[in-house]
Every structure is written in structure tokens, then in C-alpha cells.
Image (cartoon, rainbow, N blue to C red; front, side, top):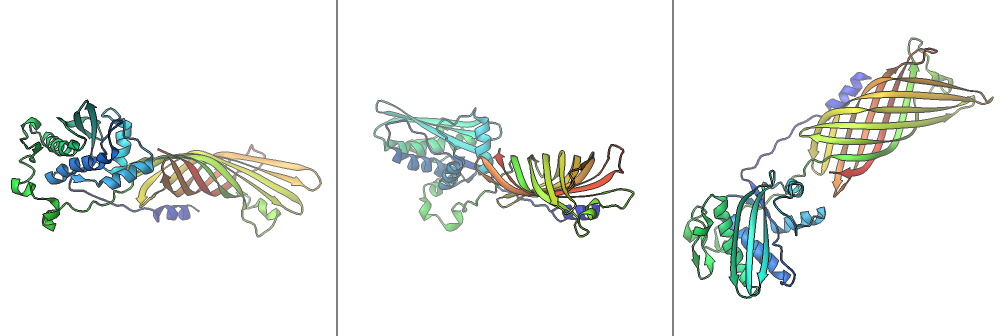
Length: 381
């Protein structure tokens, strides 16, 4: 039995590695106050992004990809600040971004004030900040966004953003970004080798789950030192009695490893000619193993230790009954996989535990094996 359990675990072990050349940055859509035409959001945001692309210092995530991801996560960025460390960490984790740029517009009479902050996702620290203001119609925000983007890139490079020169209300790119003639060249006219590479789709991030488990289980046992299998009283061909399994479990990834906590019970019943045999098998414990990302599936496989309590009752046709209780430590393996659906998760899990359990002394100890295949439905965080 132990060899089979170790074999199941060995088949699930493998490693993967990934690397990136540049830090990733996500420019969030500009937040507008009420009363300003929302159509200006896209060109203003794209203008800010354009300066980061032109600097060649970052891998800039596509705006439509960011919008789709945040929409699926049901995140609102209207109140996103440097202090929102939890929200920044969550957004950054899904986008695989090192930095996030948030920008806002304020209006006083005919004067527009456009400001932006570049925030490090991991720490929540503002690493660069810039602002511009100008009078005019709402269309002036587009030119202001280009100037703001240049100032923010300059600040990110450690330069004095106030030293960025202006020309006819627009600014040139910081010197360290690209040669002046090249920076002034429209993106559509640049040679293909100079254009930013197509942004790859970020990989999924690991997540924790807290779930209810429902499925089917089977239990088999025999008394030690006697070679007497009590199921032979029912039918010599029966090795296990199956029934309903239910419980709860938690999976907590720690890098490539995971920790689990679980509690489950399998109830089973067999109707025989001589007696009805019913059983209950309880397992409480924890597990440790590997945590792997296979596309959208977070898979795991590991060893587990459990406290097992086993009880079975014979209800004879003559109206009499007998109950036998066993308990003690056990061990086993578990394999499974979960998929995140926003704030929820769904997955499958198979686990099997084996223990040499003690009786109250009336009968010999028994070796009990309990396995279950369950559907997991719960929360993801």
C-alpha cells in the first residue's frame, strides 16, 4: 500500500522556471471628475503610456489587457492610492506588474490640473510623481498628458522633472530616453525593430483556497493478527464499502510548496441478507507538498498526517446490533487542482489515508484505509 501511495506522489513532481528582462509597468485609466467628457480618458491614458514605451526602460502592459483584467476582478480604481497596499498587491499580482501608474484630473474654472504617481506594487511607495496645469478646453488634457508622461519618466530616472523643456505647450522626451530625432519620429513610422515588442499575456498568480468538499468515498479494514476480514461475512468479493464523503479544507501556497488543513467524514452502508453494515470514518489533519501552476489550474500533491476515527455497526435481521470503534494516527497522500473564478474557486481533490487503529481492548487492532474523491467549492484569496 505504501509503495502505491509513494508512486502516486512521485508522478506529480516536476519544476518550471520563468524570467523577464525588464520591470513591468501598468498605466491605469485616468480618473476624471464628474462633468468632464469620459471620451478623453483613453487618449490621455495612451499619451502617458506612450512616454513610458518611448523611454525603453519598462515593459508596458497594453491598456485593453489591463482594463479587461480589472473588469474580470471587479476592481474599481477610482479611489486607488499609494496607501492601498492590499489592492495594489492584488492588482499587481494578477498583472505581474512591478509598478502601477495612477493619474487624476481636477478642474477649477477653466484651468485643468493633471497629476500622476508611479507606485511600487510590493511596498506601496511612491517612486515618482509629477503634475501639469493649463487653461483651455477639455482637449488640452491630451497635450498635458504627453507633458506629464515625460515628467514622470524623467522623475523615474532620477532627473529633475521641472527641467523638461516646453515647446508650443508640448515637451520633448528626457535625454536618456532616446536621441531627439528618434524620439520625435511617430511610432507608426519607426522601423519594425524599434517598435515595442508585443506584450505577452501574464501568467496566473498563486492563490489560497478555503472550500467545502463533497464527493464519494470508500473504506476498507481488517483486524490485525487474525487475517479475519469482517467484510467476508457479507460477501467474499467485497473489499470496500463506498458512500458519501463530505468535509472542509484549506490550501495555502508558500512559493512552490503548500500547506493544507482538512477535516472529512465518509459514511457508508451495505445491505446484506444477515445484517446491515454501516460505517463512519473521520479524518482530521494537515498536509505538505508541491504547489504547481499548470496554465489556469493550480495543482498540488503532497503527503498528509491525520487522526482517524473509525466506527462500524452490524444491525442483524433479528433486531440485535453490535458497534465497534477504532481510532489512532494515520498517514496518506493527496492530489488535486483548483481554478480561480474571481473571488471563488472550484476544483477536484483525491486523498487516501491509512492507519493502524486501536480498539478499546475487546478486539484486536485494525488497519483501516479510507479514500475519497471530492469536488471543492469555496473562496479564493
